[in-house]
Each structure stands twice: as C-alpha cells, then as structure tokens.
Amino acid sequence: MDFLNGIDIFDGLDPEKDKWDALVEAVVKGNVVPVIGPDVLCDFNDDDMNINEFIISSIDRQLHLANKHKTFSQLVYDPEFLSALAKATNSQTITRDSIYVLVNNIFANPRNVVQNFRPSKLLQRLLRLKLFPFVITTSFAPVVEEEMRRVWEGRTLRVLTFSNDPAKDRKPGIGDIPSGDDMTAPTVYYMFGRAPGQHHRYVLTDNDMLDFCKSWMSVQTRPDELCDQLKEKYLLMLGCGYSDWLFRFIWFCMNKTPDTKTKGLMAKDEKTHETLVEYLRRIDTFLPTNKSAEEIVDEIERRVRQYREQHEDDRFARPQKGSDVFISYSRSDSAIAEYLYRFLSEQGLNVWYDRNNLLGGSKFMEEIENAIETTKVFVPIFTHNIQKEAMDAHVYRQEWKKALTIQESVGEGRTFIIPVHEEGFDFYNADIPRGIKAHNSLSFGREMNFSALLDNINGALDRLTKFKG
Image 1 (cartoon, rainbow, N blue to C red):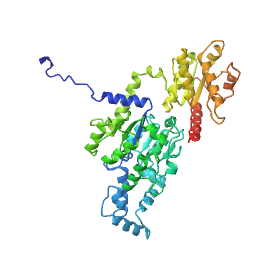
Image 2 (cartoon, rainbow, N blue to C red):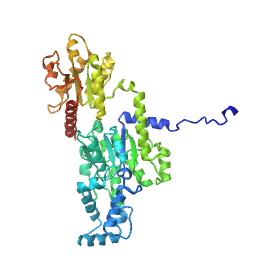
Image 3 (spheres, rainbow, N blue to C red):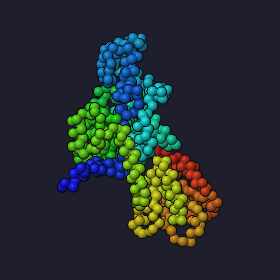
Image 4 (tube, one colour):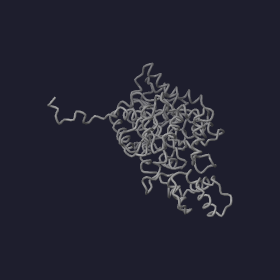
C-alpha cells in the first residue's frame, strides 16, 4: 500500500453527515422545534454572562451587595439581600418572594426590555429563517416573543405559557395547543412561565424549577397535546446550559426517553458536564463536534440552502397535507402558480403546490382531495386561460368542487376560499361555479402583486387560530 503514502483517504469525509442530513430533512419538512435557553437570548458585554446572570448582577450592584451571586437561589437566600432590599425600599415586609416583584418591575417596563434585552444576533438569524413557526423558550424573559413578533409581522403571534397552574396549563390556547396542526401557527411557548407574572408562576429559584418539573412529569398536570406532539418533533436545543440532572428532567418532560424515535440536537460547550454528554449520546441525541451554537446555526443555514438547491424539482413532487394554503390552477398558468408559491413560502407559509398536479389518476386525485380537506385556505387562480378551457375537462374543476363542499361544511365565520384573478378577467361573469363567485376575488396584474392576497390569507389564518385557541 506504499502508493498511499502521504494521502489521507479520509479527507473530505464527514462522520456526522447522516445526522446533519436528518436534521436538515426535519427542518424542511417543518418538524423541528427550537428550544431556546437563557444562554443565547441576548448579547452582553461579558460573553460568559446569560440573561439571568445579567439581572442578578444588576440587583447586586444596585443594592451594593458584597457577595456576587450566580443564581437567583444564591441571591434570595443571602441574608444581606433581604436587609439591603428592606433598607432600599424602606419596607418592613420584605421576604424572599420580593425577588419576583423586582423581576416583574424589570419586564413590566417596555423601555427596559428594549434597552437592555435586545435579542442576540444568533437568535435573530435563527428565527429570521422563518423555518420555525413554533418555538419553545425555557426562559421567563420575553426576548424570543419580541423577536418572533418582528419576524412574523402581519401574523398574530400566539403566546402560550406553562405556569404550574393546573387550571390553565392543560387548557387549549392558554397552556396547551388545541391540536397538532396548530404547531404551524406562529407561536411562542414558555415552558417555565413568563415574566411579569405571579410569584412562583415562573421559574426563578431551584425550588421553582423542581415544582415545575414535577408538574411537567405528571400526566395529570402537563399539557397533553403538546407533549404528544413533541414526542414526534426534532428538538433543536440552543443555550440550554443546565446541570446534568436538570437537563435530564427537561428532556424527559418533553417525552425524549431512550425509546423515543425522534430525538434532537443540543449545542454543548465547555460548561456541559461530561456525564450529560454521555447520557445524551446513549439515547442518540446529536451533539455536533467542536461546534458552538453560532456555528450550528451557520451549518443549518448552509445545509438548508444546499438542500433546496439540490431538491429544487423534487420538493414540488409530493406536497404534504395540513398546509396553510392550497393553490389550485390550470397547467396553462404554471408560471403564475409557481411565482405565487414562492411568494407565499417566503412569507413563512406552508403551501401545497404541485407543478404536476394536473396529471389525473384516481390515486393522485385522492391525494389532492386529502390535501384540500386538510388545508386551511384554498386559493384558486383565474385567468383568461380558464375561460379558454371552459369546454375542456380539467382536474382543477374537481378541486373547486371539493373546496365548495368543505366551505359549505364549515361555519360561516371561516374564510376557506380566497380566489385571485388576473386584471381584465371578468370573474363574476365567467363560466365558473356560483359558489366560487360568491367570494370576493382579488386581482393581480403583470407585476404579480399578491400583497392583498397575503393580507387576506393571514387574516383567515389568524381568525382560525384564535377560534381554536
């Protein structure tokens, strides 16, 4: 084998390729749920400081405490904290629970949030990919929430909170999701409560965390629908630098047990305990080698872009059911349909569009009808080509018929069919079903301006989400 001297036969091989491929495939299918911890929420001058430590150090400094604390438990159990706070507030009723009042005051002031708790560059990059409409945060701070409002501007952001309150935590639209389909709506889920809030209804101390984890682990108190869905989701854990025992609690709460098929990825750093690393590897969790959270987001961006380039044709072949929008069109209008597909997809919508969906066949028609039954909004495209084809048989007529059946079966308050037509097409006098013409149609011109359609779709989706919530 002397001819191999000096040649590295393993050069260029990626030992983690299969795991990255699995992650990317889950991302493009919408099966990844980011779980954002305190360590990546904000960028502070001290790179090693997370948002909790920033708040604690600010309290230490303002109360002129001699001891410097790393956790809220250390702070509240320091006698100097109670006496210094009593002196600063001139109050005789100071208790350890006064820490919640301090934290509530911080986050009740919008100016504090804007000035001191800007989302990190990493968080902005991740969320602005618009690949993750459902995000879990393990922090009580509303940083993820504020960035999600910016990213999904024009859509209503749903905020759900587990607050260790059995009367609320299992209630759909408050502490639980109404159904699995609702994980496609822009949502922030606070796993350990949200500030400002009632005492012990969000996690500050170790005792709070133990109480919350106890509730998460009980089938009587945890959100059933969300837990069922998380079992099938790939979890992208970033900035969750918890201790070994605590992370195992959280992982178990999310139904990630050794026999769970779908696992996730966790960004580890020098603070991650080796026993935790061993445990996660045993249950087949992906821990990328020598990659920080920033480098993991870099990889996701690069690999998703590469995947899309490689599967440009394939990704239209077999659309998934449960979409936000179903586009119905004539083969003659393929260019318009593809433009509309890309426009809506870039806005973060899950769009059913198949450039080959006019081929016919009983099985394929069954798939189309199933997709129409499970979509949230049906958008038929009408152009002069539709009028030219008035005497011809086309699959899109069956799509209209199916959509009208569904529209008749749902409540009058739900907008299911939103037609669009090209300028100059006489929509209301054309040879199309009366049921379709009963809907307000939006026109588009040569410049392909679909902004009004987007507004109408977002409005329909928001009304549907609010109703289910």
